[in-house]
Length: 254
Image (cartoon, rainbow, N blue to C red; front, top):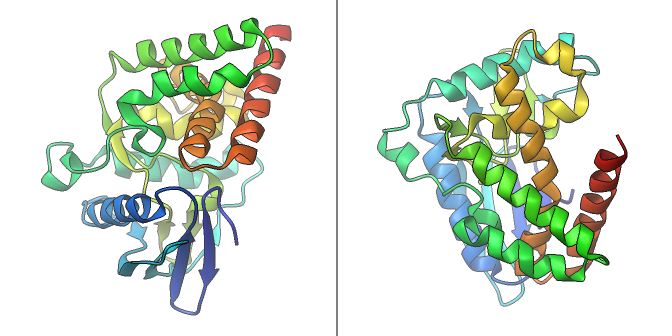
């Protein structure tokens, strides 16, 4: 299996993740540490626990974690997805943010530059073909920072898509918690606004959070582009910028 920046090998009881690219040792160390802190929070969810590592060579760094039983969430309608998503969101939001483990989670967007992300977006946006697109990228960053500025932060997973939610017979599990942070709760709704009708989501979720989630979704390709740029993966950076362009054009036409 492959993620954006990792290869994953699933064995019977453990998962082995191998990172490549620029600064792979530091990135993996940050991810493993964050996973340990998230695992220790009182969220009542089953979470994979780091076991071994990181172990590095010149070209890669590997870590080993427990494997969680269950299958990735499969839900084609909000009526099906809400049965899993709403309890997960409730449990994450119930975690006190003043706990030491919560305070020690990585800063929001640490994986793609943290506070430097807006400046890094300007840097990678130079390859966009028109000044209009470059202006749209700066506009998305500005809207996101404004949207987040007056929110009540909660513990968030950071990449709460169906592939990272494992549904077992008696439990709900989360994997890939290395981007977990204390931040805008709408971060964890960005996949939902892409996947389900807005009128259905509004029956269960606050309109202001859904509006911010749309901004987080628009910013997603710019976050991936910056992370790819920092990791030396120009092919992935250009792929992410193409996604940003197609979404920006579609939004302008719609």
